[in-house]
Image (cartoon, rainbow, N blue to C red; front, side, top):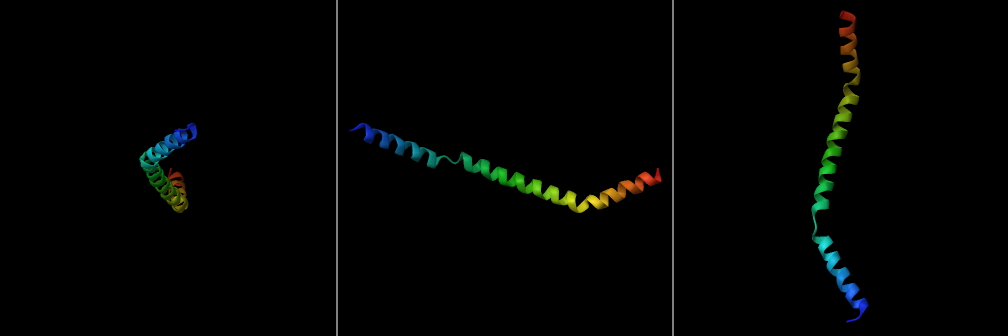
Length: 63
């Protein structure tokens, strides 16, 4: 067995190990869920901004 064959064999085993590892996929799924929640919160703040501002202005005028 030549050094080249040994390298290719070791690289193949390492690629198989990386292919079987699913921990990165889980992290990506959690990141997608978190970004979806963040986008929803940002949209809610954008939509409700004028309403909340009016509410605080009304309370401020009453005081």
